[in-house]
Image: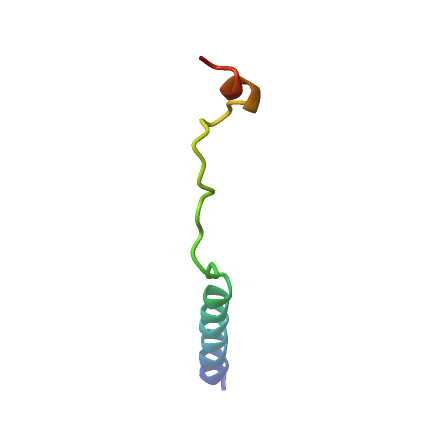
Amino acid sequence: MRIKMTLLAIAYVAVSALLLAIAYQPQGPVTAAKTDRLEGSSFLVERFAG
């Protein structure tokens, strides 16, 4: 009986881990926004630069 409960507990943990791994997969491609601006630069600096 103890072996049966141990196997049942191990199977439960394995199935739970599998379901969590499937649930936390990112949905679709993660892409960054396309921009020509430098990181941290403001619009006014770009507008009136040279």
